[in-house]
Image (cartoon, rainbow, N blue to C red; front, top):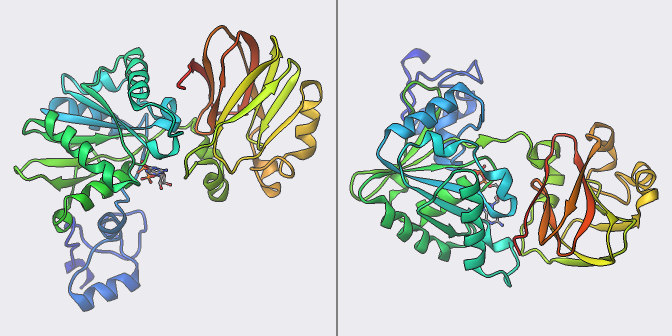
Length: 369
Ligand code: GDP
């Protein structure tokens, strides 16, 4: 009898055995569905309710096929990035995949950057960084998926460049793409009922299609997993501490050469050489910063990781990757970026080292602020 029941979302045959398989529905949900006459598989149920499409590895064949597929369409590409983790949000080679399609670069989470930061300066900085990796966006805009009043100008800009075409929204995981799509859906009242899911041809990946007024679609693609993001090394609780939810309060430290800052137990910054100078940290307000002597810093970390220096929590220390050192000789205004955690701004020539858990990038970039 079960064979006869199909998901009203995607049409796959409902089954209750194989959790990973097509059409899987937990028994309890199936019973409920039968009562109301609306049976969804778990995947479609989740899609309807949380916009929870499965994320994919950057190297997945499916994903590469998907990107190539987009290149063959005539569409507007909306690339969502997290301006707090800009470098971790870039999709390597995106410009090669999307063909001649125009790109809008959308910097999300503007709400967590200090208000003193001028928007024009930030978008100019983003444009320059995009150019460095071969991406030439038509326009760079800032938004916050958490601020409904930001949606109007985002939608207007999309409409301006869409010119009657479909819109593909792409981004790596954690940039807030789902939150943003949900906010878009909410602000275009009424369409909520119309959301459909379908598969990219030749892939096993789902996309979500949100109908637009002219019969075109805004298409949400799966999030792309970047392995070197800090997020992959932390437990849920720590992640909440690390990812800022409120406006970041920059902290200024006057340091002498030979001093070290610990960003919780997650990262370390050594001031090796140079005149006494100020260093400004931009990390979540919930992360405690400790200053020590450079020569004692490794010993200090051994002793206090998981205690004075958290996250990681004490019971996570044994599994936590060791910190790996990257040295930089800095000449002008520079950010030393700890992927996904934040950055430290330097304004005077000096030699420094940044340490991050093995697998997490530490890079230098032209100062954002
Ligand atoms: P996705 O993986 O790109 O779909 O990202 P999600 O939509 O799941 O968001 C990742 C995290 O960022 C969640 O904790 C969101 O609450 C948070 N987030 C998303 N958009 C914003 C934003 O505009 N501002 C802030 N502060 N947080 C956001």
